[in-house]
Length: 259
Image 1: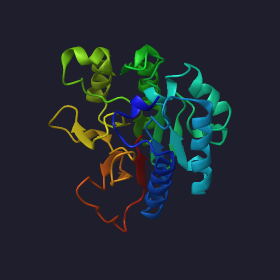
Image 2: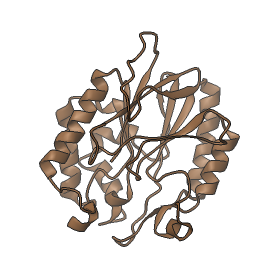
Image 3: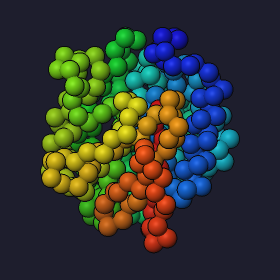
């Protein structure tokens, strides 16, 4: 489905190289764990998941240091495509990418969830749903008991689509549920993808930022974003405009490779 790339150069070899380079650069910069926030395939064909697995293997990064989250592109072909991929070519990464399961990494807890569902190719919307909302609340309680910050990894953006009617074809339909959870839980953070732009936003505006997104590897020269996780807080160390050196005192760095 070439039109899904929306005018971007569809060079499979280049996309694989960019993803591989992003992962290797992030680890070289000090990342302990990587979250990929979806749209890792063009339309979720089995052969595309096999190519993704080849790149992940080629990186030589231990699977337990990587969490994968599905995007809308990954389910266009089959609503079971993600589950089939996790039980097939992506099985080495399934333990840290199992939807709704909490991954503990030192002072950080990661909760991968899916906001995606099978829909026509011209639609790109997402939904959180009651189950995911309950799961986030449960994970928040677990993280507090462990003294961890909680990062929820998902694909769709947290804030509403800029065009009101756009939420029905693109964006998170029940975004209000997630922003309410963020408002009530200052130690909850979200890494998302989908919009191909860097995001750092607070919920509510006067509080520390809780919502982050990196540029998409498919169309950016900024291939990853690093975060420091300490004292139950998540703070970005890199921005689109500058590479900020990782401080020697940093306890844990976190990288996200989106799309």
